[in-house]
Length: 54
Figure 1 (cartoon, one colour):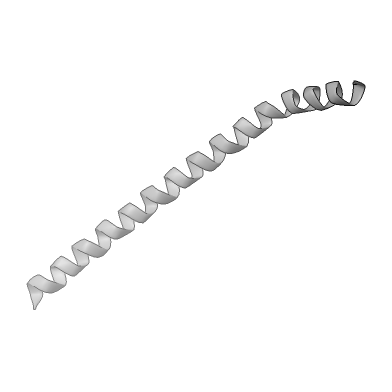
Figure 2 (figure 1 turned 135 degrees about the horizontal axis):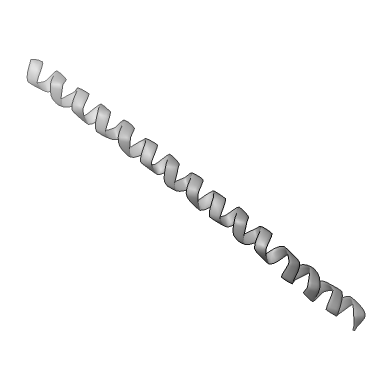
């Protein structure tokens, strides 16, 4: 029984590390998406102004 408990504990620890890594990846992607959106805003605004002038 002791070996099984040790295996379960190791598995839980590994799953926690994987979950933390996934959260970090999601946070990085979200940050990148926000930065890309902020970068594209001036281009969108300029394009809309061009359309309004037409």
